Image 1 (tube, rainbow, N blue to C red):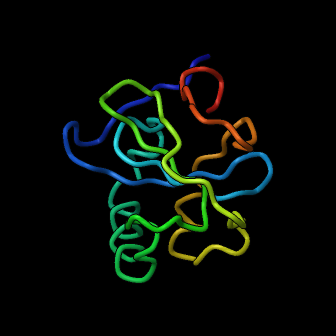
Image 2: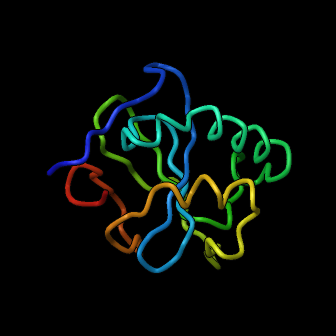
Length: 123
């Protein structure tokens, strides 16, 4: 059965996190997320606010220490926006982010993927 993917607030920037099969933290910006995450949208918003205050490098032009992907629209296609030198593992992530990221387990390792098609077996 395919995972339903939706954006909680179409047209508004929304950041969320997941963990890949290798245990690495992955940040997604904009675009849809697995529908089950939408039940936790307030928790995700709180984590985002915390990260914007405490992990500013994740949102600025400097390469963040995590795999980061962004979406241009409502289709579940995400393009890599940064390549970390030393990617952050979920186990080493701040608790505020790790709790939210643990809600979405990717079915593949991000590795050197440039594009992630969430509806292509990733979730």
